[in-house]
Amino acid sequence: MPVKILDDNLINKIAAGEVVERPSSVVKELVENSIDAGAKFIIVDIKNGGMDLIDVSDDGFGMEREDARMCVQRHATSKIESIEDLYSISSFGFRGEALAAISAVSQFSLQTKKKGEMSGVMILNTGIKDNWEIKETGCPSGTKVRIESLFYNVPARKKFLKSSATEFNHILNILVNIALVNPSIRIKFIHNGKIIFDYPLAEGDSEKSFGQRVKAVLGNDNFSNMAYFCKEAGEMIIEGYASYPANVKMNRGQQYLFVNNRPVYNNIVHRAIYNGYRNLIPKDMHPMFVIKLDLEPEMVDVNVHPRKMEVKFLRQQDVFKTVEAVIREIVQNQANVSSQIPSENNNYQEFKPRQFNHPVSSNFRLPFKKSCDGSVRAMKFNQEMLGSEKTQAKEIYSNDKQEINDKNWKILGQINKLYLVIDTADGIVLIDQHAAHERIIYDKLKDSLEKEDYKHQQLLAPVKLELSVNEMKIVSGNLEIFNNLGFELEEFGTTAIMIQSVPTDIANKNIIEIIKGIINDFFDCCKDDLKADEKSLEAIRNRAICYMACRGAVKAGDSLPYEEQEKLVMQFMDGDIKPTCPHGRPISKKLTFDEIAKYFKR
Ligand code: ADP
Ligand code: MG
Image 1 (cartoon, helix red, strand yellow):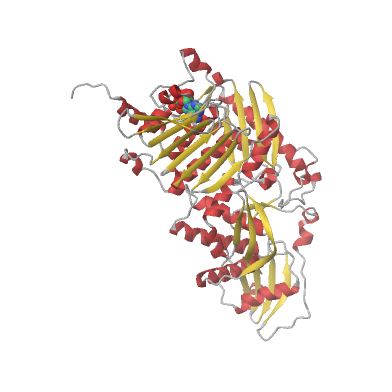
Image 2: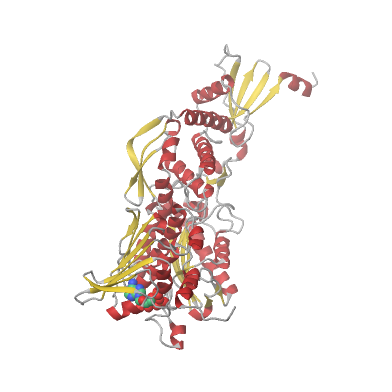
């Protein structure tokens, strides 16, 4: 074949492959253009995960007619004129090919008006090569770019798009990241006509407005469990928010890292952050953080990834040490005060500050309790923990009043605040109170779920739960499943839900913790799109029931009043109950009189 110069249209389509991977990359390019244009308000309105429509409008400085005509040409940019500019560029795009590439693979229109001009201009591609329709139009100042039917003429690329939910999720992630570092821009995001978020323009100095925006994105509750820091260390400024050690999460869903205001992933920094938390949080838990690193541009190489998602530092070691030290200091200090921060839903308010009054040694651990589902929770710090173990361990609450009943058993009492001891006709039985109760609740929940006769209990007053934008998305996308589980939840604005009713069996338990646990299961089970398919749905249901059972059951350490002991043992002894808890641990151990006699050589 003869060597040929590719025509522009084909070049644009090839470029589109690089710049426009999926709807979220279009959104990113367009929103970055709006930011470069000094916008104070950006609206992103999409349909069907951006596959049918992406509409980005801003109130930035707009373009004149000639610029509007030019901007869709390849290498058309107003942001660079000379090679020097390339190195000092501070705006987002500088390749001048985003609009050319995007418009080559979509039905594209752009409407723009410069401030002060009487009328604006609209350009749209006609579908014929190099043929643009340009017309005058009345419109507000700013720019509005509308993309319909992305990849309609590149079927190979279209085929690689995932479900609408997945594409939506990518867009949400991009927008949330952009929102976090642009607090002085109001950003509104609409999907299929529904407002996903509308973050108001955050006022005040940069520290204050950043804080306001982080709060808007992560939700009040998460925000009140994070500490602010801003440190200058050598050539780097590190600013951000990070969880108190007692408020870590079971997933990595709330971690945001920026280098020079760009969202990035960087292994070194992530490791350094986790190192900062080392020994202060359990191994399989994850801090929430929003961290911004600012360095001289020469100190960062942003070109290791085509879309600049990863960065490399010139002095990796310095960055690592600085981040680790800063986080460490913050986290340790916060361990001191976390108890004093009032928070509505803070389960750990009872921490006594004095336990941290001495310097935290490297092997110091917060009193975390491993629960049977593998999750770890901080235990309430109470006097008992200082008591010697022996005294609490050997207590026996004997109960002489109770005769062996007609069922042939009698409760002797509870030992070690965990095991119930039962006298039976042919030996004694030890029951793990938590495991047994868990199994009972689990079976009941499962049964009613299968029969679909879930018993809701209306709460006297609905409980409001503030959620981060990601958590919110999970709840709103899966309301029916929550419903099936016995929760009646209602979206309350874009940042909170109202809990109206809950499954009867867990009505008096920590509902908020349980709902958060179920949300976490969604994060774990449904990878990309946060919407469960049938298989993961089954897994989620099962895990949710497990979780509810585990959290709803009496705990090891709860001293049970006699009536409760009796209720539990009655269900265990009479019921047809499996020998293990839902996680597979045994519930009981019987020591027959024969075995005992053998041991004593009788
Ligand atoms: P780049 O951003 O790399 O310059 P683009 O293809 O994204 O390339 O945009 C081309 C040009 O179009 C920009 O340089 C800018 O002058 C203009 N432009 C694009 N979007 C907007 C907008 N929202 N407001 C004002 N001007 C814009
Ligand atoms: Mg651009």
